[in-house]
Length: 260
Image (cartoon, rainbow, N blue to C red; front, side):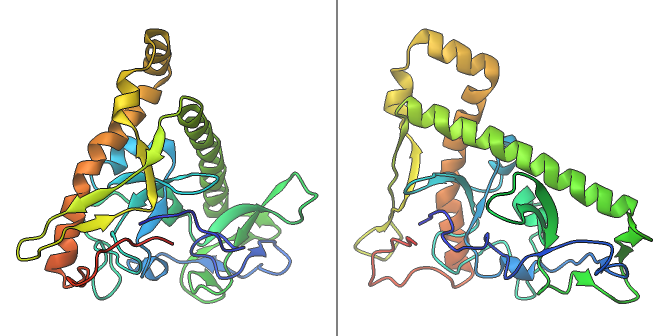
């Protein structure tokens, strides 16, 4: 169902270029109501800071394999996103993950040896470039207020990412992440559709945690995030129903297990 992106470049990004006032003095950033970069993406990375808001719209799972990360499921099968219309416009009143809002910018190391992060962008997108429309990125050799806002958002995202890694480490240390499986019986089919390839919190082990561990997690907010994740899993069947309604459901003859 869902696994962490394995490509050299992060999910969505086709290329990366450091932003600088010399080469991009006349560049502008543009807004759009079409999330073309989301087309065909069924799982999007999520930070722990977003669990409560995202849990109202998406099932939250953890990717399989090493380096597990939380993911918001926007579809259950590869290539299916039930929150985009034919024009790649997002459904109204749906929470948009920060990972989606960050594109086409991000902070990245310019070399493996460097510890410093630089503001970069995807030069293949039409959301950044020369032209008359948009918000200027530089005023002379200084970043504009708009660019400073982008930089601050990216910094906050990186900080949230560290908190997210800490959450996953806590769950793994407690042995709470297990391989997940969801079976959905659709009317008119003999066999259920079975989805695997993700991790989830083991509720039985959660109930067995020591009292002092639960108190600590209650105080530092981890317990609230765990329950937001668990409650969100009820939305898996709703996402399946959306797929069926949109004609994007799995083929009845095949047991679906969209793993990547």
